[in-house]
Image (tube, rainbow, N blue to C red):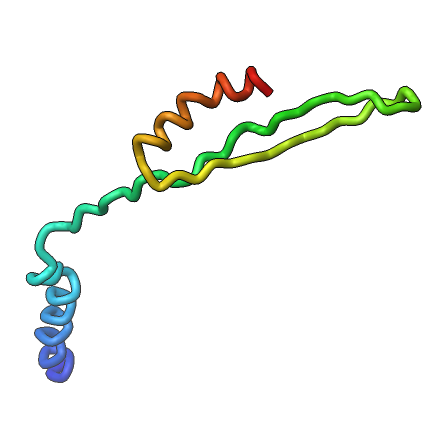
Length: 86
């Protein structure tokens, strides 16, 4: 019993230290979101007739990479026009 009373303050102190957040942590860091540099177009699908009358399907997946945020925004806004053209 005497031994249990001797260990009780140590156990309580260790529990207290473990539950307190570190003092040097400060406020949580704000994460800056990186600008989007890659944009994937929706797949384009076309049907083609072969010489022998059979049908074939062509599927094209493409993407665009631009480092400039303004240029990337313009590319994303131009997707409907590009899909209609091709």
